[in-house]
Each structure stands twice: as C-alpha cells, then as structure tokens.
Length: 271
Image (tube, rainbow, N blue to C red):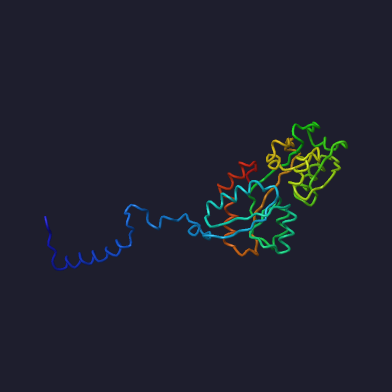
C-alpha cells in the first residue's frame, strides 16, 4: 500500500523528516549502547575532579586501615592518587601549624582537631575506637586488668600524655585511682605496640584496632566499658589545600558506605 502527500500534509512530513535526521546523526553506531547522559557515575559527574594528587595527614592508629581505604578510593576515582603521612595526632597538628603541604587531616581525638579550627574545614567524626591492654603473646605475666599495671615488677609502656591514646590512658587510670609508672612514654600508639611486640615492655595500653594488627605477637586484654574511654576520629579538609574540591570529596567518602565497611572490618566502631 502507498500513500501520496499533497499540500500542507506534504510540507509537514518533510519538516518532520528534516528534524529527525540531525537527531539520528547524533546517535552512536551500535544502536543498543547506553546514551552518554547515563554515564553519571564518573568522578567529574559526581562533583569530584577527574584526577588529583592528595596528601592526607592521619593518626598512626589508622596506618593499616587507611592503606586499604586509600587503594579502594583510588579504584573508585581513576586518576586520583592518595598519599598518607602517619604520625601522632599532636605531631600532625604541629605540621599543620607549620604549613606542611597537605589536603586533609584525620586525628585520633576531637580535642586536637578542635585546636586547629582556623586551619580546617568543618570536621566530621568517621570512626570510634576503644582501649585494650596489650601484652606479650600468651600473656606470660598474667595481666588481667588495669590494676595489674601498677605492679612495680611489670615493665609498662604508655603513650605520652600529649598524645591522644596517652591522654585516654591517663584518663582511665586516674578514674580508677591506679598509679602506673611507665618505663617509657612514646610519641604514638604504634610505638607503644612495637615495644610490647619486641619484648621491651611487658604491657602497654593501645587501641583495640592496633592490637588486632599483631595477633601473633601480642594478646589484647579487654578493659570493661565502665572503665574504658572511647576515641573519636574526626576528618577535615585543610584550608591551605591546593586541591580543595578533591580533598572535600575524599573526606566525604570516608563517611560513606564503602569506607565505613573498610573501617568496621578493621575493628573500628561506627561514628
């Protein structure tokens, strides 16, 4: 069957064809591929830059988990490289005050972060942690509780009081009226753990997640909730960052489901 168009109908048909031809030319050759508008999950479409080199200052207790998180972030954001600098939170704060080139900061306490309010964006707590007593493997000195740390025959190592884990340790010991004379006071939690691992100390107070990184070298003695302290980890961008948009995207990601799963799988508590 055929149709003949005349007059106004013919003109309308020709106009319709003329409109459709350019649209067809804009389509792709495959026919069944998704339109370009569907690709909204790229870093650029989600608001994050396509690529950036980020430097993140992070508390020592995040060393292992952030290596995993950084690799995951890079896989979600091709072209982005995340480099971490780990140290005690008080050391990180000093670096920020001295103008160290970095994009974001994550500390092991809110007090340190609050002291940097003029240097950071608005912080958000991304995780929590708790204290345990670390002893040598097999707990050879039979340490059962905080009171045992007062035994003068026991070599106990703590973090220095200006370090978040040292401050938390002093807080729980003072609350129980326990006088511990440490053989040394270390600059960060990993240094405390190392002393116990190497047998240079019989016991030390560390974060639960740190003890879990060395299950074949140390035992973790739980501290009851009523005697414990909860550490909070705030993350924030640095105002001196040259990659402000990318830094904000990373800090936001730390509170998202992918990063939260990595943190909680490593033993950190929900924020």
